[in-house]
Image (cartoon, rainbow, N blue to C red):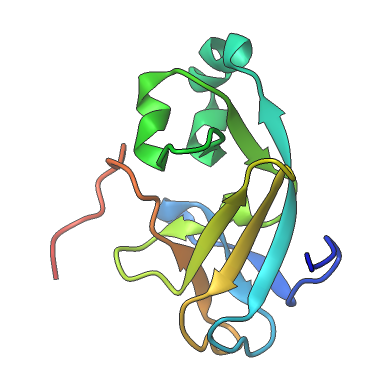
Length: 138
């Protein structure tokens, strides 16, 4: 049974300065828990040229079966933007959350990969070649 779209953990938007806005847990979240189920606005391929050249490109997910986020760079197929907090997740090579695209349902699930403490940033791996510098390796 699918969770309903209003089932979500408490999160809040935070401005992280140089890396932009992101989301943090406003309550403890356990590993495996659904953080948010977002409805998705699907961007048809015929509109991709306009959206891909805009700021929207940095917030979209690839929205075709059998594709990965890296396929966004092909400029082919549909893209999707979440109508929730998930599009505001910042990238991390060691993310605290992951996402699952429910293509046919036009939904995107964000779930915890580990326990996330209240106040901790919720991050995902963008699963694509990054268009920004992540800084020096640690």
